[in-house]
Length: 444
Image (tube, rainbow, N blue to C red):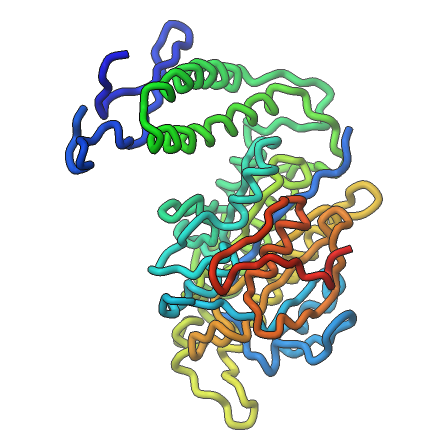
């Protein structure tokens, strides 16, 4: 094979026309110094995440009782209808290790990666991506990510250190993507393979053949880079195969009758709540229809800018500038924002209980990790943090328990989630956040 340059592409042929896939930037394209160019089955178990910003107020957020039938302090009183579906983990730490506390990052990043960030970013793939690599290729979408903030920058899901998993932010666009012309109803009486999918599979097959021969001509570092680059294409190839096979009927799958009308896209708490409800309903039905088995929902960003009607400051600013009320012992407006977040978390969990699946509900076959960025937002504290798990993971998890982490890393919850999902890894995380033991209280 002749020497390649950066313009080299892989070519596939379809209907007499050329289709190209560009290559990643390889060491092969650099000089020796790297400084210049050289030329019928059981119900599937699903996993999801839910995220919000700015924690809670310990005295009115953390239950006093540990174990089952835990009490519901003021800020989580909205959990009453779903408490028995939620495991609440409190008194956890996000250890920064040798890094400083990256305000509004360290907490949620450790909860979702087990690694303390050295900069204002994510050091590795988030837990949802890890899970999707194991269970995501069997469905139309490897994963689905949505936000209630109306801002496509607000996500807690990262493919790698530099690539956020951009969320759907418009209910109408989300509906179109899920249930528009490309949706294949598993309960439809007839099945006709989509000719566009057939064409895409053919192109990918040609491209993948060329990739195998390419691996024999490059160095070890580039082989690893190319292999990583084509992992996504291989997953896509599996998804194409899935879409070209008639799906088995799914009783729980009832696609929405009509497209939603986008609500107001402002930052008011009422608008966020409504968008969250709309995105949740679409997400839940997409999961019930087996369009994905991995999903993410953002209620609010770590620097939450949600607005309370009649109050001049957004949530994040409020946590720092509102004085503590002498009689109440906490910041009343900041607490108001937390209560709204917890109402939406309860709504999210409850939505899964409304879909019957087999002898139970969709929630019985789901595990949802809920995280935040701080313990107490007023001081950016990353101790006394809370993490949630909802669902039964196909009967592998107990629910309705309050567990005291006793100052241990919040990464313990993520590691336990991985093991409950059948992902056999001896550890998760690094340094002080490295976890090797599951939280036995919640394992069946």
